[in-house]
Length: 556
Picture 1: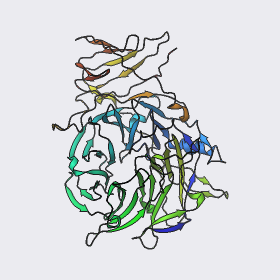
Picture 2: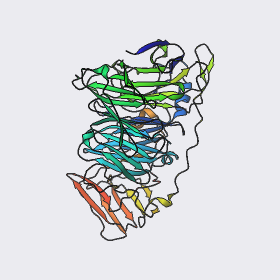
Picture 3: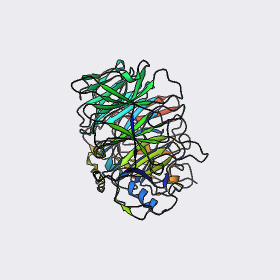
Picture 4: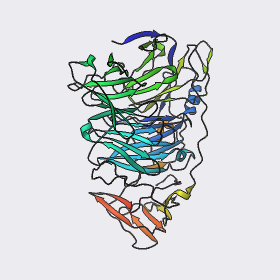
């Protein structure tokens, strides 16, 4: 059983809530992570049903400072938005690489599981379109993403776990290369890198786990927790805390919809038998018919771990005992020091669809007794109601390290000389359906090789290049509460296409009176792929557009 301790030295202090988007439809988020932040550059990326929103984290603190009272009830609807990006389908996962240079976006379109990769410099200039550096079709057989993890030491390495039990390790640079893979017989259900990134631990359907090196060669196997016997559980999440210590989250294979996961501390010493401590249901989950998932993050210098359950509105904290560092305790916080998601407008529970910790805050806190507290980390929770709920985290023991660092300026945009395939010129988009017309131009610079390549010749459908760009950009200074609720018109592909043949210029017509597109200087072949009534255009050599400048499309 878990050791519990009442803790007064640690507390969460809620800031004003920030409305980001409409409520998520039920069952659309799956096991994804829809919130990530860059402490290095002070940006927060928030998923929504129509795309994702980029905020400057400091703006959250600034808007909160304008409401010194009733922070628990105020909902900010006019938080400044740095960028809004509308996507063809709702994102199911957002994650930044460990060096904060690449943003992963995963979404599902017509049973195609596709990953898109943005560079951080795409978000430098407010009012410019973010660049998709490269994209990859992970699967086209209806599989789902169970887990993903960027390597903490080698930022270009990304591990993915799919719903058929398979696993793959990708290298993401200007192209995506499959470095290694494991077949569905692995029965993988979750994964996590070691703190130094040298090995990957993979949880499995039978409740065991294995450690793999960076070639996905198995190095060690972990046993099934004896504290769960005789019932059979599958592992649904795992955290690699230190060399021999793991925390696994388990769900009964025979579970009903109301049954909640339990967490188990797993100690696997180099010499000696493994030991287990059942932490039970850390977050006291209650939500039914919600895919079970635990969001977790380690604050290593404070020796604490935060947990959020997709079926609970409460956040759990465990920490090392201050005197006996081998003992982990579940912390019971004061009522006014807990982190919980609020009820929605109909007084129903809301549940997390993302959790992140930001270390860039430079705001000095004013406490109730008028004393002050130095800048501290910020816990960010995204609720299923489309509300971002931030909390300052204060740890007042004398040995607690100061963790916040001022953010750096965003890097300058990439020089466009490395942009696209030679021979591709400019593309002009014209919309002819109304009396008032607005146009935007996309600049496609030169490059010597295509930015996407198939890294393997195996016949498996796993990990193929994606054929289209996922998003349309909505440059907007609208407040966060209204941005995704009023997106710019999206592109609609009508039933007919027409092309100029073997000409420097060509045109595409979408529908009878819809938008038309003219290409200038196009020398590469273009082919049409037809899937029922939807169409996808793909150049023979795929091109990633860089530094696209878009203006909002208006119609009468």
